[in-house]
Length: 217
Image (cartoon, rainbow, N blue to C red):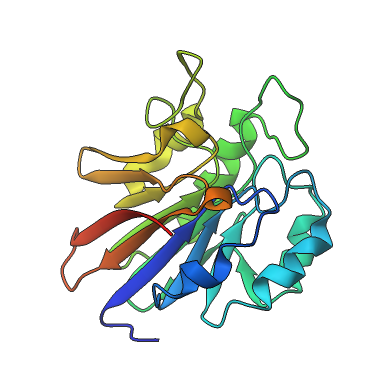
């Protein structure tokens, strides 16, 4: 991987639809980030057919529609599961938080905001900061790309911790595809990979030099 200049494909909300994967990979990313809802309520082992086809480093967190056992499946796949942990890739440091804060739908992978706060707080305390610090989260921060039915449904705990990062990659709310910025922190929802939506993130040579394109394949 070219550590000096890095182009990352950001996917989310596949919901078990992997048919666009080859088209995504034709964008020639150096790495792939997946922000959850890889399956549609399982089965967990269906992800093996996805990760065996990705020929660059892949990093993922589960979403609220993924069964909890997907963490074990991810750990044994060709992908790095970042739920509740972090990794440094040269000038890019990534912290992961999967699942979501509670929803009205009683989906398989939900956590209270206190659980999210405790988990994020402990990882941020351990992470080594680099030039570009990224949060890979399924749930959006409250107030950012998180409107559903006129209500802000994002996580208050993710919002509380977002200032620790330069970029928050999130998903969850399919209609909230977009890029926003607050206090020097960019927040991106790449849209639904199930229908060919994605993002390409370009990490440059200077702090805060992060550009994002929303694409359709």
